[in-house]
Length: 49
Image 1: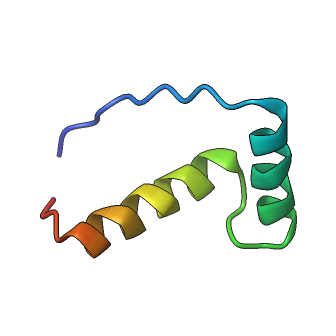
Image 2: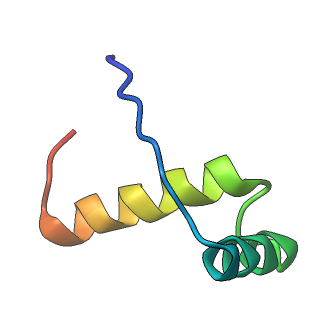
């Protein structure tokens, strides 16, 4: 399995939204939430991993 590195540049509003989503329990932390979002996007687009 290879590991790719992704750098996100989020503004303050986006960070607050991410943090509120984490607080609601969707994911344990920011990194996990981003991984979940990328995984769901890939599934939606039919990208095989």
